[in-house]
Structures are given as structure tokens and as C-alpha cells.
Amino acid sequence: MKNLNEHKGITLIALIITVVVLLILAIVTINAVNDGGLFIRAEEAAKRHQIEVEKEAIKLALSEWKMKKFDNSANQTFSNYMKARFNSMDGYRCEEVDENTVILTGPSKTQYRIKEDGKIEDVEAGLILSKTTIGILPGQTATIEVTLVGGLEGDITFASSDTSTITVTSEGVVAVAENPVGTEATITVTCSGHTKTCKVYIADQGDFLYNYDSTNKTAKVTGLSNTGLDKIENAVTTLSMPDKVIYNNEEYTITSIENSAFRNDNSGYPNLNLTNLPSGVTSIENSAFSNCTNLALTELPNGVTSIGNSAFSNCTNLALTELPSGVTSIENTAFLQCTNLALTELPNGVTSIGNSAFLQCTNLALTSLPSGVTSIESSAFYNCTNLALTELPSGVTSIEMMTFYGCTNLALTKLPSNLTSIRDYAFSGCTNLALTELPSGVTSIENGTFQDCTNLDLTELPKGLTRIGECAFKNCTSLALTELPSGVTSLGLYAFENCTSITNITLPSSLTTVGSNIFYKCNSTLQNIYVKELESAPEGWNANWASSITQSKIHWAQ
Image 1 (cartoon, rainbow, N blue to C red):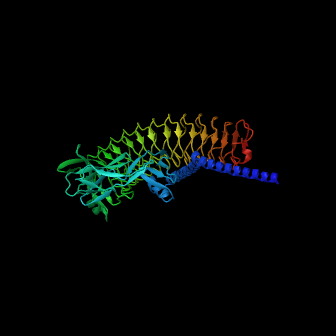
Image 2 (cartoon, rainbow, N blue to C red):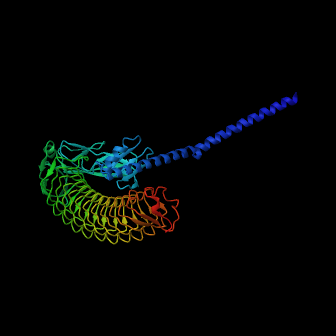
Image 3 (cartoon, rainbow, N blue to C red):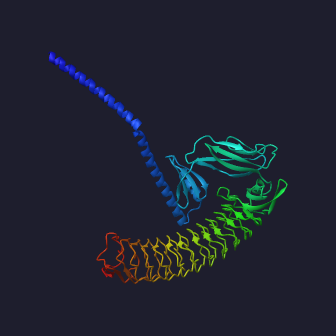
């Protein structure tokens, strides 16, 4: 009996010790989870996953935008497209930097600076102001809206440099002081050590608003005054812009039209027309007249040297026949969809032509480009159906994506000898293109590069060529190639679809990747396909690479 009791006592003690040890282990485990960061690591993993989701959403949005531009269904600016897309999605907020750039904040609180050309950049801590220059009249107010980016947090403060002229509230509402003693003031916006400024001035009372530079006695047109707005509100009205304005009993020369001066949130002032621009103007800034569809200027001041991004985009009645001689670059979308633009030449000093600069300018009738041009960007002359260039400047080394897409009167017979790159759909739809050879430095012909170029008359391709993309020569009915270069390794699907002038062709053994139906719709005219050295199609060749061709026409190991 005594032994039994002793045994029970030992068992009870062992049980108590076990429970204590388990409790200690539980406490240690909980502390390890908290102190060691297991929960934190789980949160970090979830955030990383969310960031990947956000990046995929951005890629999809950029891809869809690219397609909209490609099929001409992009009836708004890139920034408005992105805002409409993401601001309707839970947890996303999209802010405009300019019409080609946005800052997107995702559910992970990560911010991305996204540009129309597809670049995604990190966002530095700072502030974005809705306005950096404001002209107001006595009795009016305007609000400076502030967006914090790059993880910046804290209280936002507003301060006026001259409260006896311009006042500002803690919410950023500015107004002209009662009995103002000056003409302008600077509003400083501050958050956690970061500052931005906005210049506020008392505006002229005429048809237009101005920003005055008292040092140089110059003025910048910033928009329409209430008087001007009243004139154009209900009917198409032609306004006259003066060369000089009197301000504070002094004469100021108008030298510039400010960013988005007449853009009005992308809807433009469709009823606005001007008889002229001031003779002293040297700069027409970004989106200055964007969407002013009745603007029918026939000339610009001789002193203009700078025409900004989208300066005249969608000004469908703009009827310029020449540009001032001092212009050296045509910026992105500067004349996009100016369907009445009838330029026959560009200034000799022009060296670069930006993205979509003349997109769908269907009356543009250039026959040559200045010899100093070295850069022609994507879609620069997209669907310019009257463009009749016969050669390109020798300094051009790359023809970007869709540069001459749909230019049905383009009559080039040769390309610059230093050319090395021809991007996707660069000449697609150029039915009058009559090239007989390509520069020796070209190593890749991308997707759709010469699609629908029915007069393309190449008989051979550059020896250094390594890639021919999808639909690269689709519907090139005059193409009469007999052999592909020995270094070509990749041949995209439908590459030679409906190339009915190819009767006999030799493929190199270097081909490692071949897409489907490369000779689609060629069976009735294609007599023989000779494949060098290879006994059969390698693994990288699509099983249907020649499915539309009678198999007896294919000759292996030649």
C-alpha cells in the first residue's frame, strides 16, 4: 500500500513538472513570435504579395493603354485614363503630375510614378500642388490642393509672403486682401520639412489672365478672365490677344502662353478662337491650347522657339503652313490630331520629333525632314496619310514603334545607312513604301514592322539579321525573297503571310524558334521551301509552322 502511494506521489509530481515545462515553452514561443518578428514577417510577406499584385495591375493598364493608342481608341489623355481606371478600384488612388505622368498609391501604400512611355519610377517624399501660379481678381478665391507623396506624412501649413495683398486660410484658400497694398504674393506650403511654393497675383481685368515678371517687365498668359469666359460661353467667339498689357501703371510685353492656359481640365475651350498670338511670344508651354477645336491660327510669331508637349493637341482647325525658324524640337503630342495642319516643311534647326508629335495629322504634307534630325520617336507620324517623304536624314539610327504607321503616301526608296533598329509596326500600312534593300546594320525586324507594305520589293535581308518578328512582312505581296540570312534564329508566327511573290525560299539551319503559319496564304504561289542541313523541324519549331503548305513542297537537309 505504501509503495502504491509513493508511486502516485511521484506521478503527480511528474505531471506538475510537465505542465510547468509546457507553460514555459508556450510563453517562450509567444515571446519568440512577438519579439522574433514572425507576425511582422507574415505582414511583410503579405505586403510583398500585394505589391506584386499592384505591379501586375499597372502592367495590364499600360498594356491596355498601348492597345488603345494602337487602334486609335484613346480618346483621353494618359493621366485621365489612369485616374479613371484606378480611382474606381478599392484601395487605389491616382494623382496627375502632368497629362503624361501619374503617381499611383496602391493598397500596400506603395507609391509609383508612372509615365506614358511605360517607365515606373520610385516616388521621392514631397508635395504636389494643384497649382503653382494663380491669377485672381478681387472678390474671387482659389484653392491650392496638396497631395503628399513618397510616404510623406504630417500637418500641412500655408503661409503668405504678403498678407496685406494675398491671404490664405489653413485649408489653402487664397483671396485678394481688402485694399491690397501690393500686386502679388508667394504662398509657401510646408509639411514635415518639405516645401513648395505657389505664386498668386492680382489679375488684369481684360479677356485674359496674366502672370507678371516685374524684373523683366514681361507677362505670361495664364488663361481666360471672367470677362473672356463670358464672351465665349455661348458662342464661337474670336478674341484678340494684345502684344502688351499695362499693369500697375507699367507696360509689360507678353512673351509666353502658360501650361494648360486654355486646356480647362482636358475639355478645352471649344468655342475659343484667336486672331493672333502676341508678336513677342517665344514660348508656348505644355497643353497651352489642348482641345481648342476652333482655334484657327494660320501663323505663329517669328520669335517662338519652344512649343511644349501637347501644346496644340486636338486643335482640329489649326491651319499653320509653317513653323518659326527658331524651333529646334517638336515635343511629344505637340500637334496630335491637328487634322487641318498643312506644313510642307519643318525649320532647318529641328533635331528631334517627339512621341506622337504629328499623330493623325492627315493633311501634313512634308516631303523632307531637316538634315539635322537624329531622333524620331514612337508614333511621331502615325496615320499621316499625306506624308510624302522620299528619304530620312542620315543621322537617324533608330525608327521607333509605329513611327510611320498608316502613312500611305510615304515613298522612301532607301533608309539611312547607319540605321540599326526598326521597331514594331514602324512602317505598317505604308502601301507606297518601295524599299529594295535594308541597311546592313539592322539586326532585328520586329512584329508587324512592314505589315501591309504591298510595294516593298526586297530581294534579300541584311546578313547580320537574327530575328524576324510576328507578322513582320504580312501582306507584302511584292516581297520576292529567296533566302533568309544564315544567322536568323527566330521567325515569328505569320511572318510572311500572303507574301505571294515568294516562290522559292531557303531557310537557314540556325533557326531555333519558328512560330505557326509563317507562310499562311502562300500555298498557291510558293513552290518550294528548302531547309538547310536540318533533317526535320527542331523542338523549338511550332508543329504548325507550315501547316498551310503542301508538305511535298518542303525539302529538308538541303
